[in-house]
Image 1 (cartoon, one colour):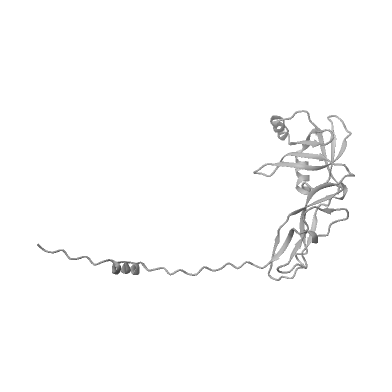
Image 2 (tube, one colour):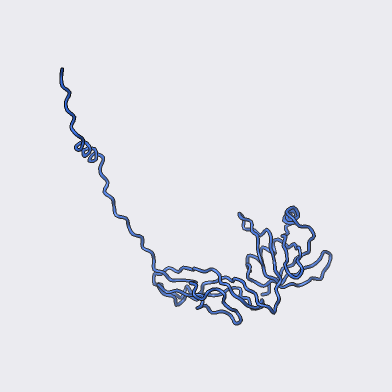
Length: 219
């Protein structure tokens, strides 16, 4: 499904202007392209799209001016998203405009499949890469890359070069990078019990080791 987002041009910039926009449930944004544009977005719409699409999905940004029904459509990718460090909510988005006939380089998420079909051999599945870097035309950007682990057995691994990529998608990540591995469970060594001397024994040994004192002479 096509991802679309409606934006409005804005004139004001700076922290105060951004604070006012957020008070109106709108989100400040910037489009970088042939001509940079200051924008504002519906905060809830932008948050919903970001939660589902992340930063690796082609978006049609529909920009309209105030009191105008027509829009200018721009194919964009998210360049950077600023998040609230506590709540995780969006605070600001930077977009960059892409050319539909030029390849882009970006990272897409990895998703494990086939876990239910795996034979339970006692191994632990470790995902070592959560995303890979690829290059392709904007219309060919996959939402995710699936990693089939149904045949993965203990002490085996799947490398980036083993992944099946959609047509037109080129791998930028090194093909020798480990993506996922089936490792044997770690067995922690049990420390040997240390011999603890009983207090009484320790006192007795100290007394026996001490030199005998000569008795005092009577006058």
